[in-house]
Image (cartoon, rainbow over all chains, first blue to last red; front, side, top):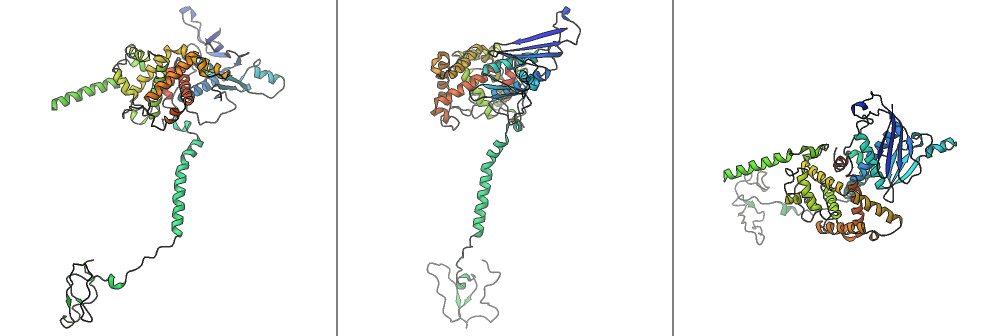
Length: 260
Length: 215
């Protein structure tokens, strides 16, 4: 039994022609289920002719509409590249959208397939639609997918896109640029510092280096007490050689155990 | 003192339980919990929800009253108790002048989405009319002042936006200096709101708020 379903919005009309696989249950008050699609028509207000295709065209139009509506509401573009062999809806410069349908998906009689019959190369059908027309298309698609008596297996997955789907490779490069720049800066600075000569630290004379150990007598070779620096409060006891104990008990060199 | 603190804790727990299991779960039908860390709405979600509500307020002068009516009609009081609570939830937008340093949980986010769609559906014809007028004016290279409804919406939106957002924030600075940028934002929000008025508008808005936020 042939069935026709129409989803009509002010700016977009979707018409589905098909057949029912199930038994006629109209007698029970239910609508017959459209389970096999034979012809699909999408008409936008202001256009001369509708876009006519089959099940493949319908499936791709539903997917493209869902994808575009998601990107439009969130305001985040998708990272996936456009595939010319599929139906696409891309935002245009003037705030509208460009709907591109490959000619292979359209039936004879549509504007694009006319060129094919004339032996020309198959051009893709491109339509300029406004935001309101896109909304009507989306609403018609939503009504169609919500209708359980028309192609019940046709479903749309409305779910948020993952970070990978949204993040474009270009954006990744842009985000990693400051990190790379910082790492390169550190590397250059390290290389420059590596080639710089090590600064010479003036070594103090040995006399100043040898610190007398506190509590131990320091010998003065000439018997003259060493001049204590002005301001130092440490008084070092000076022992003359004559008063010194036997050689070997008091070493002139600082003891290794002396506290530093 | 100890008893008082225990009783307060009990109240909080019951309130929290009320939030996690709203009375009217039908209102949230079809809104799936996204897999976001901590089960709180991300920054972009909070900003977007608040800006959409500002756009709806600019569209309808009685929007604030309609929100309260909507709370009763949709039985959302267990989640959003009153006007002050609604104000607190909207102030989770980090770009607000009086931004609250608190998070918006998923249930509260859903309630705001349901409210936004409720208001948007009441204004569907006005939104279509304004967007259509904008397209026509653009085609004729005319300014927005040539259409009363459009000009009124843009003027109200600019007023609401600048009076409520923190002008010291970097994200707000471009809008502070240029009314053109603010007009574009207002029209872009209006276009997004139109898409929420449809059959699956609520699901579409909810899922779009977490675009790029899930792993």
